[in-house]
Length: 437
View 1 (cartoon, helix red, strand yellow):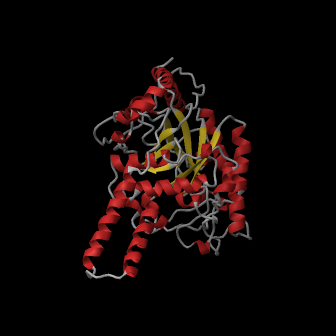
View 2: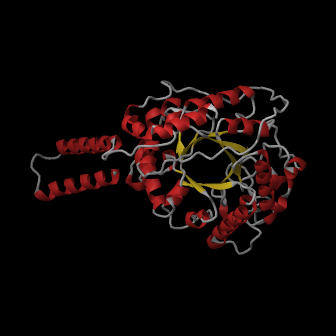
View 3: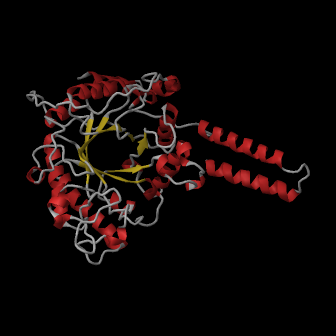
Protein backbone atom coordinates (compact mmCIF):
# COMPACT_ATOMS: atom_id res chain seq x y z
CA UNK A 1 0.00 0.00 0.00
CA UNK A 2 1.59 3.27 -1.08
CA UNK A 3 1.56 6.44 0.99
CA UNK A 4 -1.37 8.13 -0.70
CA UNK A 5 -3.55 4.97 -0.56
CA UNK A 6 -2.78 4.68 3.17
CA UNK A 7 -3.79 8.31 3.70
CA UNK A 8 -7.05 7.72 1.85
CA UNK A 9 -7.76 4.69 4.07
CA UNK A 10 -7.13 6.69 7.21
CA UNK A 11 -9.27 9.54 5.87
CA UNK A 12 -12.16 7.16 5.27
CA UNK A 13 -12.03 5.79 8.84
CA UNK A 14 -11.88 9.32 10.21
CA UNK A 15 -14.54 10.83 7.97
CA UNK A 16 -16.89 11.72 10.82
CA UNK A 17 -14.15 13.51 12.68
CA UNK A 18 -13.11 15.31 9.52
CA UNK A 19 -16.63 16.63 8.98
CA UNK A 20 -16.59 18.12 12.49
CA UNK A 21 -13.19 19.71 12.16
CA UNK A 22 -12.90 20.54 8.47
CA UNK A 23 -13.76 24.20 9.12
CA UNK A 24 -10.35 24.46 10.74
CA UNK A 25 -8.52 22.52 8.02
CA UNK A 26 -5.26 24.13 7.04
CA UNK A 27 -4.42 25.32 3.55
CA UNK A 28 -1.65 23.38 1.82
CA UNK A 29 0.58 26.42 1.35
CA UNK A 30 0.61 30.13 2.15
CA UNK A 31 1.67 31.61 -1.16
CA UNK A 32 0.82 31.49 -4.83
CA UNK A 33 3.64 29.50 -6.34
CA UNK A 34 4.50 29.14 -10.00
CA UNK A 35 4.96 25.42 -9.63
CA UNK A 36 5.25 24.83 -13.35
CA UNK A 37 6.48 26.89 -16.23
CA UNK A 38 7.24 26.36 -19.88
CA UNK A 39 10.79 25.12 -20.51
CA UNK A 40 13.05 27.76 -22.04
CA UNK A 41 15.17 26.34 -24.86
CA UNK A 42 15.34 23.05 -23.01
CA UNK A 43 16.17 19.82 -24.79
CA UNK A 44 13.82 17.02 -23.88
CA UNK A 45 16.07 13.97 -23.78
CA UNK A 46 14.85 10.42 -24.28
CA UNK A 47 15.53 8.17 -21.29
CA UNK A 48 15.35 4.44 -20.79
CA UNK A 49 11.92 3.29 -19.65
CA UNK A 50 11.80 1.86 -16.17
CA UNK A 51 10.15 -1.46 -15.47
CA UNK A 52 6.96 -0.05 -14.00
CA UNK A 53 3.59 -1.73 -14.03
CA UNK A 54 1.04 0.05 -16.23
CA UNK A 55 -2.03 -1.51 -14.66
CA UNK A 56 -4.81 1.03 -14.25
CA UNK A 57 -4.87 2.85 -10.95
CA UNK A 58 -8.28 2.82 -9.30
CA UNK A 59 -10.41 5.85 -10.07
CA UNK A 60 -10.78 8.02 -6.95
CA UNK A 61 -13.50 6.54 -4.76
CA UNK A 62 -15.72 9.58 -4.74
CA UNK A 63 -14.41 12.82 -6.16
CA UNK A 64 -12.17 13.89 -9.03
CA UNK A 65 -10.08 16.99 -8.29
CA UNK A 66 -7.69 17.77 -11.09
CA UNK A 67 -5.60 20.24 -13.03
CA UNK A 68 -4.79 20.80 -16.67
CA UNK A 69 -1.21 19.95 -17.67
CA UNK A 70 0.16 20.94 -21.06
CA UNK A 71 2.31 18.52 -23.04
CA UNK A 72 5.35 20.76 -22.58
CA UNK A 73 4.89 20.57 -18.81
CA UNK A 74 4.49 16.79 -18.94
CA UNK A 75 7.81 16.13 -20.68
CA UNK A 76 10.84 17.40 -18.73
CA UNK A 77 11.78 15.46 -15.61
CA UNK A 78 11.90 18.54 -13.35
CA UNK A 79 8.29 19.38 -14.21
CA UNK A 80 7.17 15.80 -13.68
CA UNK A 81 8.72 15.88 -10.21
CA UNK A 82 6.98 19.16 -9.40
CA UNK A 83 3.64 17.77 -10.56
CA UNK A 84 3.92 14.65 -8.43
CA UNK A 85 4.95 16.75 -5.43
CA UNK A 86 1.81 18.87 -5.87
CA UNK A 87 -0.39 15.78 -6.00
CA UNK A 88 1.33 14.25 -2.96
CA UNK A 89 0.69 17.31 -0.82
CA UNK A 90 -2.75 18.57 -1.85
CA UNK A 91 -6.27 17.31 -2.45
CA UNK A 92 -5.53 17.01 -6.18
CA UNK A 93 -5.80 13.48 -7.55
CA UNK A 94 -6.33 13.87 -11.32
CA UNK A 95 -4.06 14.94 -14.19
CA UNK A 96 -5.64 16.18 -17.45
CA UNK A 97 -2.77 16.02 -19.95
CA UNK A 98 -2.85 17.52 -23.45
CA UNK A 99 -2.06 14.93 -26.10
CA UNK A 100 -3.49 16.92 -29.03
CA UNK A 101 -3.86 20.70 -29.07
CA UNK A 102 -5.79 23.17 -31.23
CA UNK A 103 -2.77 23.86 -33.43
CA UNK A 104 -3.00 20.20 -34.44
CA UNK A 105 0.13 18.89 -32.73
CA UNK A 106 -0.06 15.32 -31.48
CA UNK A 107 2.22 14.84 -28.49
CA UNK A 108 2.31 11.05 -28.19
CA UNK A 109 4.24 8.79 -30.54
CA UNK A 110 2.76 5.79 -32.30
CA UNK A 111 -0.12 7.52 -34.13
CA UNK A 112 0.61 6.56 -37.74
CA UNK A 113 -1.46 9.26 -39.46
CA UNK A 114 0.13 11.95 -37.29
CA UNK A 115 3.64 10.58 -37.88
CA UNK A 116 3.14 10.29 -41.65
CA UNK A 117 1.88 13.88 -41.94
CA UNK A 118 4.27 15.72 -39.66
CA UNK A 119 1.76 16.26 -36.86
CA UNK A 120 3.77 14.45 -34.17
CA UNK A 121 5.75 16.69 -31.81
CA UNK A 122 8.08 15.01 -29.32
CA UNK A 123 6.88 16.80 -26.19
CA UNK A 124 6.17 13.81 -23.92
CA UNK A 125 8.99 11.27 -24.21
CA UNK A 126 8.40 7.93 -22.52
CA UNK A 127 4.73 8.74 -22.07
CA UNK A 128 3.89 5.21 -20.88
CA UNK A 129 6.53 5.52 -18.17
CA UNK A 130 5.15 8.83 -16.97
CA UNK A 131 1.57 7.57 -16.92
CA UNK A 132 2.73 4.54 -14.92
CA UNK A 133 4.48 6.81 -12.40
CA UNK A 134 1.31 8.84 -11.96
CA UNK A 135 -0.74 5.70 -11.41
CA UNK A 136 1.73 4.48 -8.81
CA UNK A 137 0.76 7.61 -6.90
CA UNK A 138 -2.96 6.87 -7.39
CA UNK A 139 -3.30 9.83 -9.75
CA UNK A 140 -6.14 9.41 -12.20
CA UNK A 141 -5.01 10.09 -15.79
CA UNK A 142 -7.07 11.85 -18.46
CA UNK A 143 -5.92 12.48 -22.04
CA UNK A 144 -7.26 15.77 -23.41
CA UNK A 145 -7.85 15.71 -27.17
CA UNK A 146 -8.77 18.82 -29.13
CA UNK A 147 -11.02 17.33 -31.80
CA UNK A 148 -12.14 19.56 -34.66
CA UNK A 149 -9.98 22.67 -34.32
CA UNK A 150 -6.79 21.60 -36.07
CA UNK A 151 -4.27 23.75 -37.91
CA UNK A 152 -2.16 20.92 -39.33
CA UNK A 153 -4.09 17.97 -40.69
CA UNK A 154 -6.51 19.95 -42.94
CA UNK A 155 -3.46 21.56 -44.57
CA UNK A 156 -1.95 18.12 -45.18
CA UNK A 157 -5.25 16.50 -46.14
CA UNK A 158 -7.61 19.25 -47.38
CA UNK A 159 -10.39 16.72 -47.90
CA UNK A 160 -10.75 16.57 -44.10
CA UNK A 161 -11.08 20.33 -43.62
CA UNK A 162 -13.86 22.88 -43.51
CA UNK A 163 -13.88 24.80 -46.82
CA UNK A 164 -14.82 28.21 -48.14
CA UNK A 165 -17.28 28.60 -51.06
CA UNK A 166 -14.34 28.63 -53.51
CA UNK A 167 -13.13 25.27 -52.22
CA UNK A 168 -10.08 26.54 -50.36
CA UNK A 169 -9.62 25.94 -46.63
CA UNK A 170 -11.68 28.08 -44.28
CA UNK A 171 -9.88 29.58 -41.28
CA UNK A 172 -11.18 31.18 -38.09
CA UNK A 173 -10.28 34.69 -36.95
CA UNK A 174 -6.91 33.45 -35.72
CA UNK A 175 -6.10 31.84 -39.06
CA UNK A 176 -6.61 28.29 -37.79
CA UNK A 177 -8.17 25.58 -39.95
CA UNK A 178 -10.82 23.14 -38.72
CA UNK A 179 -11.54 19.50 -39.37
CA UNK A 180 -14.99 18.96 -40.85
CA UNK A 181 -17.18 17.46 -38.09
CA UNK A 182 -19.18 15.58 -40.71
CA UNK A 183 -16.08 13.97 -42.23
CA UNK A 184 -15.64 10.32 -41.21
CA UNK A 185 -11.91 10.38 -42.06
CA UNK A 186 -11.52 13.16 -39.50
CA UNK A 187 -13.34 10.96 -37.01
CA UNK A 188 -11.03 8.04 -37.73
CA UNK A 189 -7.97 10.22 -37.21
CA UNK A 190 -9.28 11.30 -33.81
CA UNK A 191 -10.08 7.72 -32.77
CA UNK A 192 -6.59 6.64 -33.84
CA UNK A 193 -5.11 9.18 -31.42
CA UNK A 194 -7.46 8.11 -28.63
CA UNK A 195 -6.77 4.41 -29.05
CA UNK A 196 -3.03 5.05 -28.86
CA UNK A 197 -3.54 7.08 -25.67
CA UNK A 198 -5.42 4.16 -24.12
CA UNK A 199 -2.59 1.80 -25.09
CA UNK A 200 -0.17 4.09 -23.24
CA UNK A 201 -2.26 3.78 -20.08
CA UNK A 202 -4.62 6.77 -20.01
CA UNK A 203 -7.82 5.87 -18.20
CA UNK A 204 -10.05 8.52 -19.73
CA UNK A 205 -10.33 10.45 -22.99
CA UNK A 206 -11.54 14.03 -22.72
CA UNK A 207 -12.79 15.66 -25.92
CA UNK A 208 -12.37 19.43 -26.25
CA UNK A 209 -13.51 21.57 -29.19
CA UNK A 210 -16.13 18.92 -29.79
CA UNK A 211 -18.11 21.41 -31.84
CA UNK A 212 -18.43 23.43 -35.02
CA UNK A 213 -16.51 26.71 -35.57
CA UNK A 214 -17.81 29.84 -33.83
CA UNK A 215 -15.18 32.55 -34.39
CA UNK A 216 -14.71 34.19 -37.74
CA UNK A 217 -16.93 34.37 -40.81
CA UNK A 218 -18.82 31.15 -40.19
CA UNK A 219 -21.30 32.01 -42.95
CA UNK A 220 -18.54 31.11 -45.38
CA UNK A 221 -18.07 27.63 -43.91
CA UNK A 222 -18.78 24.80 -46.32
CA UNK A 223 -19.03 21.23 -45.08
CA UNK A 224 -19.14 17.79 -46.65
CA UNK A 225 -22.81 17.70 -45.66
CA UNK A 226 -24.42 20.03 -48.19
CA UNK A 227 -27.53 20.28 -46.04
CA UNK A 228 -25.72 21.73 -43.05
CA UNK A 229 -28.03 23.25 -40.42
CA UNK A 230 -28.23 23.64 -36.67
CA UNK A 231 -30.10 20.36 -36.50
CA UNK A 232 -27.63 18.38 -38.63
CA UNK A 233 -24.69 19.94 -36.78
CA UNK A 234 -25.89 18.84 -33.35
CA UNK A 235 -26.74 15.42 -34.76
CA UNK A 236 -23.20 15.05 -36.18
CA UNK A 237 -21.62 15.84 -32.81
CA UNK A 238 -23.86 13.32 -31.06
CA UNK A 239 -23.13 10.67 -33.71
CA UNK A 240 -19.39 11.24 -33.23
CA UNK A 241 -19.76 10.68 -29.48
CA UNK A 242 -21.92 7.63 -30.08
CA UNK A 243 -19.18 6.13 -32.24
CA UNK A 244 -16.52 7.11 -29.69
CA UNK A 245 -18.56 5.34 -27.01
CA UNK A 246 -18.65 2.20 -29.13
CA UNK A 247 -14.94 2.29 -30.03
CA UNK A 248 -13.32 3.46 -26.81
CA UNK A 249 -15.49 2.07 -24.03
CA UNK A 250 -14.79 -1.49 -25.18
CA UNK A 251 -11.10 -0.73 -24.62
CA UNK A 252 -11.82 0.12 -21.00
CA UNK A 253 -11.59 3.91 -21.19
CA UNK A 254 -14.06 6.44 -19.87
CA UNK A 255 -15.13 9.40 -22.01
CA UNK A 256 -15.68 13.02 -21.04
CA UNK A 257 -16.42 16.23 -22.93
CA UNK A 258 -15.66 19.92 -22.46
CA UNK A 259 -18.54 22.24 -23.33
CA UNK A 260 -19.17 25.99 -23.24
CA UNK A 261 -20.37 27.18 -19.84
CA UNK A 262 -23.57 28.63 -21.27
CA UNK A 263 -24.64 25.25 -22.66
CA UNK A 264 -25.82 24.43 -19.15
CA UNK A 265 -28.69 26.87 -19.56
CA UNK A 266 -28.96 27.33 -23.35
CA UNK A 267 -31.99 25.77 -25.04
CA UNK A 268 -30.39 25.49 -28.49
CA UNK A 269 -27.03 24.33 -29.85
CA UNK A 270 -25.57 27.87 -29.54
CA UNK A 271 -24.74 27.70 -33.24
CA UNK A 272 -21.90 25.23 -32.67
CA UNK A 273 -23.68 21.88 -32.50
CA UNK A 274 -23.49 21.49 -28.72
CA UNK A 275 -26.73 20.22 -27.22
CA UNK A 276 -25.61 19.21 -23.78
CA UNK A 277 -28.42 16.80 -22.90
CA UNK A 278 -28.11 14.76 -26.11
CA UNK A 279 -24.30 14.72 -25.86
CA UNK A 280 -24.32 13.55 -22.26
CA UNK A 281 -26.10 10.31 -23.12
CA UNK A 282 -22.93 8.93 -24.72
CA UNK A 283 -20.28 10.04 -22.25
CA UNK A 284 -19.34 9.39 -18.64
CA UNK A 285 -18.63 12.97 -17.59
CA UNK A 286 -19.43 16.50 -18.75
CA UNK A 287 -17.17 19.44 -17.92
CA UNK A 288 -18.83 22.80 -18.59
CA UNK A 289 -16.21 25.56 -18.68
CA UNK A 290 -17.91 27.88 -16.22
CA UNK A 291 -15.09 30.43 -16.19
CA UNK A 292 -16.53 33.71 -14.84
CA UNK A 293 -14.27 35.73 -17.20
CA UNK A 294 -16.04 34.16 -20.18
CA UNK A 295 -19.53 35.42 -19.33
CA UNK A 296 -20.86 38.66 -20.75
CA UNK A 297 -21.89 41.56 -18.58
CA UNK A 298 -25.39 41.08 -17.21
CA UNK A 299 -25.39 37.29 -17.56
CA UNK A 300 -27.53 35.73 -14.82
CA UNK A 301 -28.34 39.30 -13.77
CA UNK A 302 -24.74 39.96 -12.67
CA UNK A 303 -23.28 43.27 -13.83
CA UNK A 304 -19.64 42.08 -13.86
CA UNK A 305 -19.48 38.26 -13.84
CA UNK A 306 -15.68 38.17 -13.67
CA UNK A 307 -15.84 39.87 -10.27
CA UNK A 308 -18.55 37.57 -8.93
CA UNK A 309 -17.08 34.05 -9.37
CA UNK A 310 -19.26 32.39 -6.74
CA UNK A 311 -22.56 33.50 -8.26
CA UNK A 312 -21.57 32.68 -11.85
CA UNK A 313 -20.26 29.21 -11.06
CA UNK A 314 -23.20 28.50 -8.76
CA UNK A 315 -25.73 29.54 -11.41
CA UNK A 316 -23.91 27.64 -14.15
CA UNK A 317 -23.85 24.39 -12.18
CA UNK A 318 -27.38 24.93 -10.87
CA UNK A 319 -28.58 25.16 -14.48
CA UNK A 320 -26.68 22.01 -15.45
CA UNK A 321 -28.22 20.01 -12.61
CA UNK A 322 -31.69 20.74 -13.96
CA UNK A 323 -30.72 18.88 -17.12
CA UNK A 324 -27.92 16.43 -16.29
CA UNK A 325 -27.30 13.67 -13.74
CA UNK A 326 -25.21 14.99 -10.85
CA UNK A 327 -22.80 12.05 -11.05
CA UNK A 328 -21.82 13.06 -14.59
CA UNK A 329 -21.05 16.69 -13.80
CA UNK A 330 -17.42 17.76 -13.31
CA UNK A 331 -16.95 21.50 -14.03
CA UNK A 332 -13.83 23.28 -15.23
CA UNK A 333 -13.09 26.17 -12.85
CA UNK A 334 -10.94 29.25 -13.46
CA UNK A 335 -7.45 29.57 -11.95
CA UNK A 336 -6.15 32.31 -14.24
CA UNK A 337 -6.57 36.07 -14.42
CA UNK A 338 -8.27 37.73 -17.37
CA UNK A 339 -9.43 41.28 -16.71
CA UNK A 340 -9.62 40.66 -12.97
CA UNK A 341 -6.98 39.23 -10.66
CA UNK A 342 -7.72 35.70 -9.45
CA UNK A 343 -6.08 34.37 -6.29
CA UNK A 344 -6.89 32.10 -3.37
CA UNK A 345 -10.33 33.57 -2.60
CA UNK A 346 -11.52 33.63 -6.22
CA UNK A 347 -10.48 30.02 -6.81
CA UNK A 348 -11.78 28.67 -3.53
CA UNK A 349 -15.14 30.42 -3.85
CA UNK A 350 -15.69 28.67 -7.20
CA UNK A 351 -14.94 25.33 -5.57
CA UNK A 352 -17.41 26.19 -2.81
CA UNK A 353 -20.06 27.09 -5.40
CA UNK A 354 -19.64 23.58 -6.78
CA UNK A 355 -19.97 22.04 -3.31
CA UNK A 356 -23.03 24.15 -2.54
CA UNK A 357 -24.66 22.44 -5.54
CA UNK A 358 -23.57 19.10 -4.04
CA UNK A 359 -21.08 18.52 -6.85
CA UNK A 360 -17.85 17.31 -5.26
CA UNK A 361 -15.66 16.92 -8.37
CA UNK A 362 -13.93 19.73 -10.27
CA UNK A 363 -10.99 20.58 -12.53
CA UNK A 364 -8.82 23.70 -12.49
CA UNK A 365 -7.74 25.32 -15.74
CA UNK A 366 -4.74 27.51 -16.33
CA UNK A 367 -3.27 27.54 -19.86
CA UNK A 368 0.22 28.13 -18.45
CA UNK A 369 -0.19 25.53 -15.70
CA UNK A 370 0.37 28.08 -12.91
CA UNK A 371 -1.89 27.11 -10.03
CA UNK A 372 -2.87 28.80 -6.78
CA UNK A 373 -1.53 26.27 -4.32
CA UNK A 374 -2.88 28.07 -1.27
CA UNK A 375 -6.41 27.55 -2.62
CA UNK A 376 -5.94 23.79 -2.29
CA UNK A 377 -6.46 21.79 0.87
CA UNK A 378 -4.34 18.85 2.01
CA UNK A 379 -4.67 15.39 0.49
CA UNK A 380 -6.86 14.22 3.37
CA UNK A 381 -9.62 16.48 2.00
CA UNK A 382 -10.12 14.72 -1.34
CA UNK A 383 -12.75 12.34 0.02
CA UNK A 384 -15.30 14.88 1.24
CA UNK A 385 -16.70 18.39 1.00
CA UNK A 386 -18.81 20.77 3.06
CA UNK A 387 -21.89 22.70 2.00
CA UNK A 388 -22.15 26.31 3.15
CA UNK A 389 -24.76 27.26 5.73
CA UNK A 390 -26.71 29.90 3.79
CA UNK A 391 -26.24 32.72 3.35
CA UNK A 392 -22.70 32.19 2.11
CA UNK A 393 -19.99 34.75 2.73
CA UNK A 394 -20.19 35.69 -0.94
CA UNK A 395 -23.93 36.33 -0.69
CA UNK A 396 -23.47 38.45 2.44
CA UNK A 397 -20.79 40.49 0.73
CA UNK A 398 -23.03 41.02 -2.31
CA UNK A 399 -25.97 42.01 -0.10
CA UNK A 400 -23.79 44.53 1.74
CA UNK A 401 -22.70 46.10 -1.56
CA UNK A 402 -26.29 46.38 -2.72
CA UNK A 403 -27.32 47.87 0.62
CA UNK A 404 -24.53 50.44 0.42
CA UNK A 405 -25.54 51.30 -3.15
CA UNK A 406 -29.15 51.74 -2.09
CA UNK A 407 -28.06 53.99 0.78
CA UNK A 408 -25.93 56.11 -1.55
CA UNK A 409 -28.84 56.42 -3.94
CA UNK A 410 -31.13 57.50 -1.10
CA UNK A 411 -28.69 60.26 -0.09
CA UNK A 412 -28.84 61.71 -3.60
CA UNK A 413 -32.65 61.74 -3.62
CA UNK A 414 -34.83 64.58 -2.29
CA UNK A 415 -35.62 64.30 1.42
CA UNK A 416 -39.32 63.99 0.67
CA UNK A 417 -40.27 60.92 -1.29
CA UNK A 418 -43.61 59.45 -2.11
CA UNK A 419 -44.79 56.02 -1.08
CA UNK A 420 -44.50 55.08 -4.74
CA UNK A 421 -40.79 56.02 -4.77
CA UNK A 422 -40.13 54.02 -1.60
CA UNK A 423 -41.82 50.96 -3.02
CA UNK A 424 -39.82 51.28 -6.25
CA UNK A 425 -36.50 51.38 -4.36
CA UNK A 426 -37.58 48.47 -2.17
CA UNK A 427 -38.58 46.43 -5.21
CA UNK A 428 -35.33 47.13 -7.14
CA UNK A 429 -33.17 46.24 -4.12
CA UNK A 430 -35.19 43.07 -3.53
CA UNK A 431 -34.73 41.99 -7.15
CA UNK A 432 -30.96 42.58 -7.00
CA UNK A 433 -30.67 40.58 -3.78
CA UNK A 434 -32.65 37.75 -5.31
CA UNK A 435 -30.39 37.74 -8.40
CA UNK A 436 -27.33 37.62 -6.14
CA UNK A 437 -28.56 34.34 -4.69
